[in-house]
Amino acid sequence: MDCPGDWPEPIVRVQSLSESCNDAIPERYVKPPEARPLLGSTLDANIPLIDLGGLHDDSLREATLGHVSEACREWGFFMVVNHGISDELLDRAREVWRQFFHQPMEVKQAYANSPKTYEGYGSRLGVEKGAVLDWSDYYYLHYLPCNLRDFNKWPALPNHLREVIAEYSAEIVRLGGVLLKILSINLGLSENFLQNAFGGSDIGACLRVNFYPKCPQPDLTLGLSSHSDPGGMTFLLPDQHVPGLQVRRGDGWITVKPAPHALIVNIGDQIQVLSNATYKSVEHRVIVNSAQERISLAYFYNPKSDLLIKPAKELVTPDSPALYSAMTFDEYRLYIRTKGPRGKSQLGESLKSSR
Ligand code: OGA
Ligand code: NI
Image: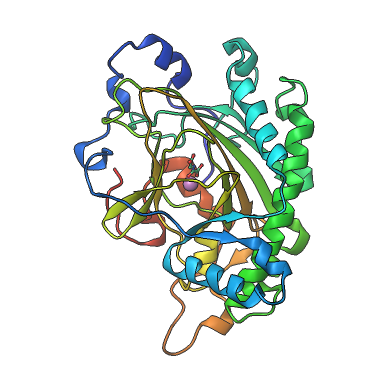
């Protein structure tokens, strides 16, 4: 199976729709009742907040590892502060992308993407003709592996975007390495286990910047449908003013309230597989609103795409047999790239509230 060369239908930019559609959204964006934001309970809770500063303090290190361990097992999602990336760099990274999306349409269209690689300026995930669409545009680019890094595919404008994003990317990759070590130790494996399973220094790192325009009927649609992230681990820099990310908790949803300059970390499907489901890749979705646009930077830290990923043999016992068979990440991600976000159906789990 290969991804088709082009989109099945003409692409409509949600940002343009948001400006032209007045008070009703087009039918194509209206979700079936069971997938709408108001169905299902919203819980008044937040995901765990972890101070990674504790890793550098001998008296706090064990407790910090414990907090990460519990968050990975019980939530699949947590926020980190004192992660080593300066507040100023986080703000600049968000700001250059906000400027990108506020440029004239023809500037952005020069980077229009196709389903072949998804790189560039996009407005849909999945290529199924007639699919219900999400209320968002995005920009997708590769940082690692190096041979996929092509600065010509990164926006030339606004000025400084490329250098700010290169600097931000290097920091995220550093932090990804730190967290993979912690997760490996917490799983009782050697500290380099996950990094090696991901391909050592040949990992993949790619950024999807999500832009959620204002929506006149936010109760009928979603900015991003329920899904779990197919890759290894995700680092999300959320909007500093506008909430929107919801994380599944049992039958309900938690709206994440980000701490200032926190990064949101979540376990992706590949770590669920490698950990033989000790750690769960948890479903999440994004709601939109009529008052304010929202922007987020989702950094995906992934295994090298042609390595076979399977449960670590140390975690497979007669009592806990391997739950997944070996698959490369290349094979795995074709599913979401073809069908679009669909809950957790890819790992054989129920579709629950997705479409
Ligand atoms: C994603 C994602 C959440 C957000 O890009 O995979 O889940 O808040 N984004 O934009
Ligand atoms: Ni996601």
